[in-house]
Image 1: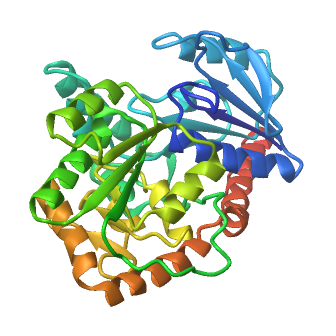
Image 2: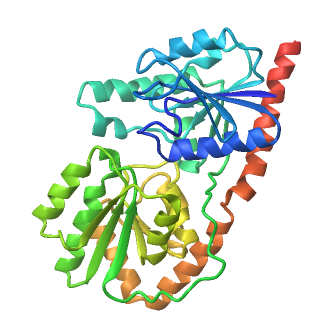
Length: 371
């Protein structure tokens, strides 16, 4: 069968993130099953118009506002596809109205307030209206997402059918948990794209709160992004230059090493489709303390695999860290439960179910062709 993914970014795009990692995982698995798999994405400076990644044919064309036209032009020259996957990131590809085959919509999160982070009023207001209107327009299209929070948001916007496919991680859980007592200084870590919606400044302020409360702690920030200079400036302003380490982007092995050495992962995002780095940290025996937002309240099970803070404030996050420090035996229980649960999200388990479902959807494309 032939599959096509439409996504604004591909794995080599400088702005790629967790969405592209999981997309690559699904498509590579379909390729391993013997299918033809294509991924159309926006062009970006220095990118080849076509290349192969993990057996997936990557096609690039157009940019903001023009890539849909480029995709349609390319698509008209191609043989029949059994399934087109229209991945939404604020804006869709409107593929159900031009692809001529079975189409599913793939959504990681309902952006909602994230529009306010990246755009000023009235653009942010229009963005939120447009997102709701798009979901209503797509109301009869089969949707696919990873978390219950996103599913509920789509239903509120009028979407009728939403299928849940959990995210998987490549991170292999440690074969056995090594001792890691939570003793000072408490080693905190953030792994994220450094973007406004991730609110990494909240994690840095959490460290300041902890130190003001007499808790010896340090923070490692793994990742790159447009907010990096601002975060460095904030670190200096709060007098934390010796306690915050910025590593930049790291290879997977180095990232896992950092996660393995940390006591706790902090996650302060405005909302997430799931929170892949929570599970990656869990696989390394590191629980998380997270904000009570969509996605993160599912990747971290409060009081079982980690802590969901009472509020979206550095003070609340710091209190979650302090709870782990004050209850070392409970912290060890979090470690074990998080580590065990992370094993269930490895790609080896997730991809079988995901590919079975995608193939069933593709068969619908073949049936529509015969009809």
